[in-house]
Image 1 (cartoon, rainbow, N blue to C red):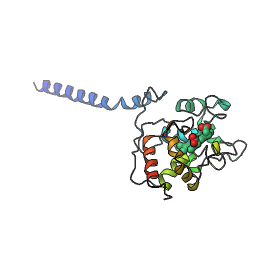
Image 2: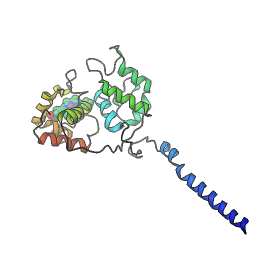
Image 3: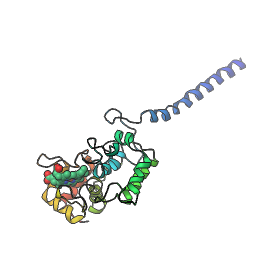
Image 4: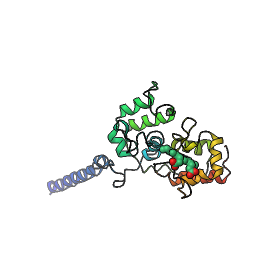
Length: 233
Ligand code: HEC
């Protein structure tokens, strides 16, 4: 009888440990399996809050500084490099090449090439961080949307820098439009074209040109700032 109890007990213990042990197993392979290839089909895993979000932080920089017509959009594909979306970035440029091009001090090799400005150190550091984290896509970033402390210096300036300034800076004012510095940005804020272009109002050319519409959170922040009179705060 005692033997039987020990036998049953040990089966229970073994079963619990096997089932319990398995519970944690599938998570790791699943994460790797679901690394997205086409963003329209596979939804990537939620991004840990402190890691880089490709669609919100890296793609806008590439779109504004690299993926324009004549350079690295699908139609031009200079050197075979296409930087307009995640799968093209993954398949057409190595991390080494990317870092070398954006950090070199040899101006004839540097990307984006003169007269365009080089990427800022913050942008370069962000791209490096993204590479170190494994070049993940991380669309579903869950970074939250802060609409209570919207300022030009902390909120609006960085959005324009990331999404617009590659094409609209002192050195590269596409369409004759310079969005570098508060005074210039304020001009287009007052015209209404700053908002009109980003919300894709049919009266304006949709911006960022050739890229994804900026997300609702940033549009909400822009509206809050505009409603407050577009202050230099
Ligand atoms: C890839 C390059 C590129 C990016 C990125 C870009 N623009 Fe433009 N933008 C252009 C070009 C080129 C024009 C000239 C008109 C056209 O071709 O549509 C233009 C025109 C404009 C105009 C005038 C259009 C009108 O209808 O009055 C505004 C305003 C503007 N951009 C704002 C922005 C803002 C704001 C952003 C960022 C959210 C941005 N752009 C991002 C290339 C770009």
